[in-house]
Amino acid sequence: MRNYHVRLLNLHSAADAASLMRQIGTDTHGVSLMKNKMVHYSFRVGPLPAAAANIIKQEMLSVGGEAAVTRGVINCSAQASDAILSATRKQYRNFCRKLRAQPFSLAQMADRIEAALRHQEKDEGLPFHCRDIEVDLKKRSLVMGILNVTPDSFSDGSLYLDPEKALAQARRMVKEGADIIDIGGESTRPGAARVEEPEELRRVVPVIEALRAEFPGLPLSIDTYKSRVADAALKAGADIVNDISAFNFDPEMAEVTARHEAWACLMHIQGTPQKMQENPCYEDLFAEICAYFENSIARAVAAGVKREKLILDPGIGFGKTLEHNLLLLKHLREFTGFGLPLLIGTSRKSFIGKLSGAPVTERLPGSIATVALALAGGANLARVHDVAATRQALTVIDAAKNVKR
Ligand code: YH5
Image 1: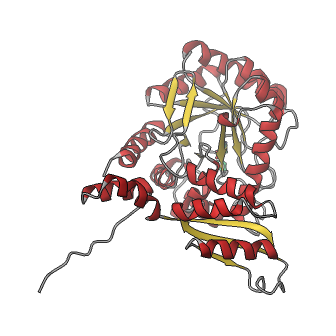
Image 2: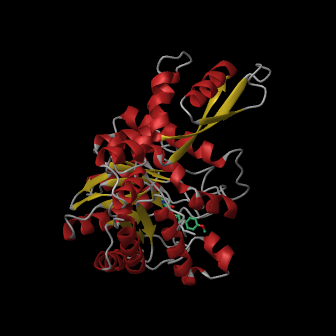
Image 3: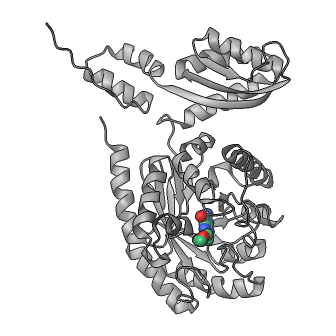
């Protein structure tokens, strides 16, 4: 009687499949053919007219994949449908070739599927080059240190309103391994008071000028949704516009960012900081955030911002319930199809307090856990208060991501 070993595998990607096949001595040509058959990828597409949904169902089955559509599409008693697709890379290649010969703009869908699949793997790096930081974000994740120059920030209130104190905190974060410093002059925590533009400028511009002089190679970002604040900050030496409204609150913001050839972090928010936590509500959380990203990216690119200089952020805590925040952390990977860097800002936020009961000063363990989860799901930058601890966590997670099997 023989005793065969049966061992469960964890195949994340075609690259994983390839290295396992090499381990058992598979023929090299066979490896490159088979690796694209060994992992399944899923998409939700739509809304489709019933006829297009039927074409998709048929073509997907013909390549050996699967497509679920709305009941009633088959006899056109349902007029429209989304579709859930599941197939291997190889099957999508054939599927997309067939879509290109079909009406209903299905060629456009083929382009989108192929782009998203390219972004899913190591075929393409994710370059970030800003000042002295030049990295492939797929290999090394970045820490963005939070510098609040505000009297009312929820976790470090009034500590850094004095420019000298702000500078001291920035120096400390740089020493602890911050890759980027994010300077903000208006707190956007739920219900925080608005700050008028002249006051916001008075707070942030001197700090940016001083940091730029002291750290010529350090990327600086400006946390503001006001174009005139962004303009002054960029003139003073900032590199990245971190806009919690993704260019939605101020109509000039995209143009200002483009003119300075700056980077931009486009964050999702539902509502305004004053009212966003009153009753956050979504019909489809992921669909709505993806649509918001699509629109914000299009607006940025139309204004002249390079697509390669955009970063996306689902906006943890910005018009989200505890459950929304957890869903976003758990399924962050769904935002990697854009092929853009993902930033996550969970540090010390109140959902960590809600889960643990910890007051704001004692939320570091929970914050680190969220960073680990987010990085495992494809996040590339973590915006945090606690730089040293986060840097250590990122170093460990990146090492595990990069290890070869
Ligand atoms: C962010 O996530 N956050 S400032 C809600 C809270 C607590 C704190 C109590 N700017 C982000 O830290 N920029 C801020 O609930 C940000 N991403 C990006 N890109 C607000 C903040 C906070 C919000």
